[in-house]
Length: 240
Image 1 (tube, helix red, strand yellow):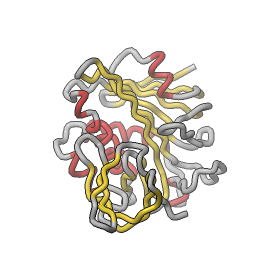
Image 2 (spheres, one colour):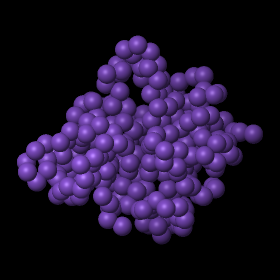
Image 3 (cartoon, one colour):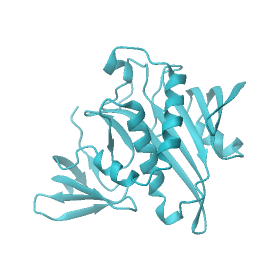
């Protein structure tokens, strides 16, 4: 059973439960600007093999389907930039972007994003963007090292429907901007700060200096060497 309505350009479908909103859109999504939001996901996924903990009816777990016809496949990282910036502006509270697309407040993770771009030759066929935003949950029981919710930060409940509306409006506006790459980089978690990282060679100290247009992260180590990383090639060592 589901409810359907329209917000801005988005058709929003509300369902009680599914294994994954991304997978739901892969199965049933047949139009652009489609959003499916679930009260509960039985198999919510983060990036790679990570799972996403979310108490039933407490948070925002949703996915949107878009057809970004103006973005070539070679520039698909622009989608990551748009979504991350829109979420930071929706959340407020000096939210930052832990490369490539986790949203943090301080040293704690408030939101995760799973983007699945489907390509057709050199063009984008479509993009399914899954978002898990911690809203009203107060206790986290998984082994995730540093989760936080809006309620834990503010002490107040947040209306999830209004928050979703705010995000869709913001995303719609952000998608028309020309400076998302610059805004994304300015909001980078630990930008310009000496911090601890780990890669296949071990732990090292370094400073984030930039993100390339294709999404590679650049970190300058203590020897002055700029190291270049693709997704999953470097780990941020987070203070717990």
